[in-house]
Length: 244
Image 1 (cartoon, rainbow, N blue to C red):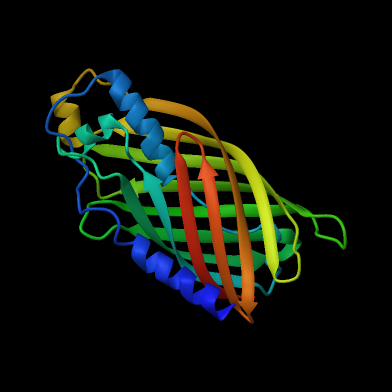
Image 2 (cartoon, rainbow, N blue to C red; image 1 turned 120 degrees about the horizontal axis):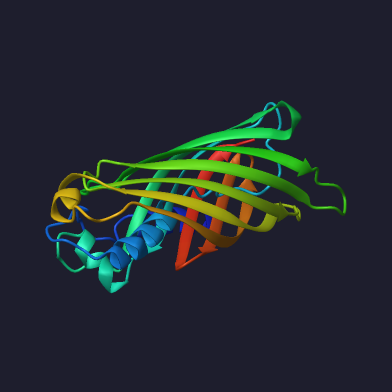
């Protein structure tokens, strides 16, 4: 388990250095179809990732940690969003995360991301309710809601709202889980892009997603988690946290 813990730390450190430094911005007009595709993929990349099993933390529980998501941005139309330069294959999104348990199986949480050497910043919040307590045989089931907003990018105003359900079962120190839901993406034209393409319309999109992950507790108060999400493209998330 010690080796696994060190491997997780090393993987997060490596992933945070994958993407090239690049600001999001536009220097030429784009078509509506390009803006819609870009909004859909950017919205899913910036949507909230719970990175947690469905079981509630309980009234005394908390979880604080760091994570990173590896977001595939390989589509050709992404180059328009990077001021005409070739888009990186991936963007790494490092996050600071906090969750707190409340009465009645309710958890609340928040996250913040600031991608080094770019203008990409992101903040978000979550609310979850455990609908089915985990038993000896039965799994835990939860319903979750989330919100994120992109900050720091003058030419795009993107907000997302997510509604998801997740199910999982603890097996000693390992808890596998899976889930899915819908993400509403509100993408608005602003800044220089609005000047370059005054007829460009805002996009509002519903997009389904599926995800699966596993949390490992190798030591007291230590939580390691890996998660894979798929909507339009795969997104990989790793998290290291302390809590109980």
